[in-house]
Length: 259
Image 1 (cartoon, rainbow, N blue to C red):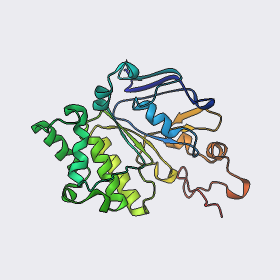
Image 2: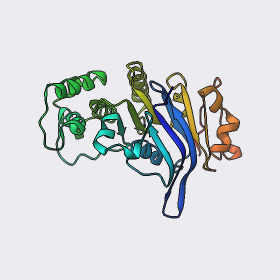
Image 3: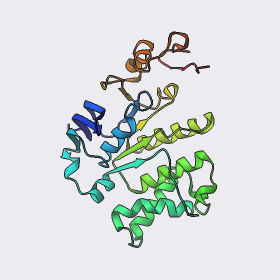
């Protein structure tokens, strides 16, 4: 079966700085995959490559059997949605106005919303449970509410692949668990998800597989049980002896905070 996303020997550099080197992996449709690795290792870059927003230095990114770089940008945006860590909104847009922007790949920058666009917007808000917030100003929302709105914006694109860049960042524990429940429910709806995750202890139970980017530019893939192990993570995250990874109940991972 053709994978939905396939990185074939992909490398990427910013000038002379190599960020990704000879990366190869595939993601099947309707899967839910966590992307982990140390800060600055290239997780966001990988997501931008998967969204077609960056071009490989070498290698090829394939989407549903076609080279992603051969797909028109607007068409790619109908297939793949990227939800960034930060979303700066300089104006007092309402939640509904923000989510409506997800229909841009279908109507253009200045087109009007048609009936099918309205349906997609309503469905995205229902799935993310933000319908009651539709008239609220985005910049006045809590962090957890903003994350849901950003995800709804991506879902309004009706993508086959949803890319999430640190979706639980800066959220308290309760809101993080809410986001995980949302990710799980979206995956149950048939949305393929690739999410970079900082909270390793929250991966098991939601994500079926894990991609680990290490400091040697190598990538490991496997189930949470195979990847979330002290020996592997201590090496990948270069944990000092006094701050080793501890396990409450393998393979759940709890990182000791550095003093």
